[in-house]
Amino acid sequence: MQNQIHFDLSPEVLILDPFHTPDFHVLRQPDFLWRAIPAGRIHGFAASEHPQVNDRIQSVLTATKRDRLFTRALEVATVPVHLSDVWFRKSWVTQGARCLISGAAGLRLLNRYAWEHEATDGDTRLADHFARLQAIPGPRTLAQVPDDLAPGTPIAIECRNTFNYYHFLTESLCQLCLVQETGLKGPIYLHFPNNQEKTRGFTRAFVEVLFPELAPRVIFDRAPVHHAEVVVPYNFTASLYQLSSAELDGFEHEFPPVGAWKGRRATRASHAILAGHAVDSSLFKLRARALQAIQGRDTTHLPKRFWITREGEARDRRMKGEEDILDMLRLFGFEEVAFERLTPLDQIALMAGAEMMISYHGAGFTNMLFAPPDATVIEIGTLQTAMYRWPDFWPLAAVSGCRYLTFFADFDAEDPTREPQFSEDGIVPVHLSRLGLARIMSVVVSLLGETPEFQSADEVQTLGQTLMAIGEHDRAKALFETHVALSEGHVGLSLAMADLADHQGDKAATLAALYAAYRADPSDWAILIRMLWCARAMNQSELVGTLLATLHDGFPDRYDAFARARPWVRDYYQSEKAAAQ
Image 1 (cartoon, rainbow, N blue to C red):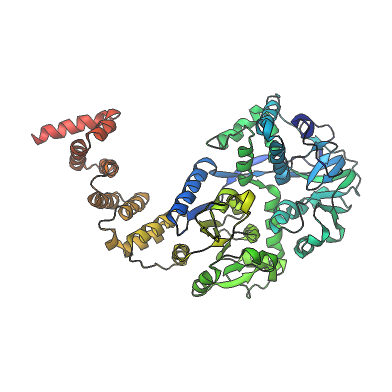
Image 2 (image 1 turned 135 degrees about the vertical axis):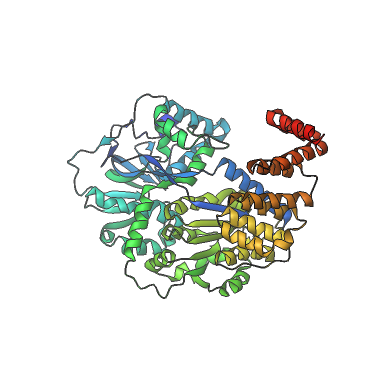
């Protein structure tokens, strides 16, 4: 019963509001609750050998970019808070009967509440609850802790568990960065819900090497646990929805509602999208502390290019095709590494010196937190990854600034074209086919400064568009120049070359590539219109007239639609026609 959360309570009774709770005291006022920061350089690509799976992956990627991917990320404050009568129940924290909605644990609690009340539309109940809070006028303030806080007051940190590397580092270990600023000298508890035998050694090891001054005070203690008074870290991600409507104007201006994102409307979808872009301020502190810890360390034994494999229980979901890609990567100086073999400081140093890391989806990508901004981190996942897990690592890419690419390959399943149900099939391992291998290696080789040679225009188009998508326009240009002969008669490659030339501001090259595309497919009126705009930008009056006449004669309906809102078109066409007569 001590672990029980009373989800039958109304949101008003169950959810703690830090701005209107008299015994919620911050030890210091945060400089900000949230602020916009540069988003991670995040890109995803389909890499299945089955066209129908690629189509499905591409539809998910398109919807994600349109409805879920922000142009900026947001850093959200985490501050130490003094509370009384606190229970750590499983991986949740309550003050009396009220639940803290701090950070990732708070978002999981809200999701659980909506699920528990699914039959009565718990999602709407929660959203309406936050809307009522937002309607309360006035700026939000946080009460300050009294100056006479006992130095021995304990500090307690919630752990989702002590065996998952991702959750431990991103949700719990980072909060130790706040301890020194509290000035407290009491015990530091890390409360977790799992059986002790499931605890992994990395938890204590990372505490000892990154927080040696705190390690003697750190106590791993299984929940449920009660504290009469305690200091806990509080992250305000979910509490942004408890701000006033006026205060959310700036937030909504920076992150306007679109698609599944409803802005200040706190739906489950909005919470999930926010989680993919909200960066706990403590993560920046953990990165800085980790990089400081390896200063002066000899790292000559660590590779710059590496493939991350798995050891221990994680081997059960190893990727089919791992040896094939390893054979190819070794030709370009890559080494095989298992994080489980490395000390915590070597893991950090490995990533801090990385030029390129490649692996399949797993908790090891947590170490992207320590990557340099000029590193490229490549993940291989599946359609499941695209649908359910891809945003997990987005905040880490925003913190490090590295380039994060994900290729979504096939399922290692009896029928790889069947879309598995997460609730029934769990996480299905990855299968990297020969086609997927070629797709990924062509990008790897290009990023390493080589220009692959192809016999197929389709392959050149695909690689060129991938390189442009990730900002490698010069490499795309070298690729196109090497394979210019393949563009003759190929619409897609010609259009890709036109896109590149347009990006680089070369109007003449753009027009030439568009003309090549139109020669390959004279039935495509959209190419004609692109040529029109390009010719007009170049002040090629005679060519504009010729193109308008071609559009008028070949596609009269499209001509009418194009001319309807553009009076200059009909005037131009009529004048050119009269001059010709």
